[in-house]
Image (cartoon, rainbow, N blue to C red; front, side, top):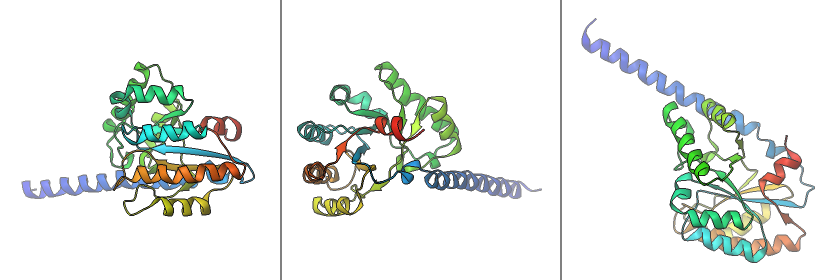
Length: 240
């Protein structure tokens, strides 16, 4: 067999292996989303669970914390471990004000696109950062909600429960507005809603629009009799 044919065959095998590896992640993600226990929660509760991804952001997260403190609302933050390292005071404020802190990967890396050694290193670096700060992390939200078998195994090894959502309003989009977000939240939010929002990333100052929408919706929800809790309370009471 010529060298050219050997190289071509090796490339074909490598491409097939990479495609298979990618497809395993896609299938695992679809299966895990279908099994999402939050989809099966009843709507007869008057509890809401605000959750925030992609932070901490040094500009928007303090603004959001100010709003939550003013309205006496506790929320759950799934933060990038890299931001915990660079914003220790902001992280400490979050904890002192009674919010739940969970992990959202090290730098918003997609599990489906990560090789095993990269995924292992992502969890290892992330958990080490929290361990050094003596912060117990019990919950994990994978970026984009994407998971693969190794990611599920690593969550189990580190004692992490994966938390997805049952309400999402695409608040990261650059074309959205506070009004659009309010309209979506009014239509989608019911009892036992686990609402996925973002305090970091997003186009055209998207997190600011999220904060503006919440400044309208939180008082409205409270008028309707809703109370706010962290995902820790949800899982302890409703999900085994």
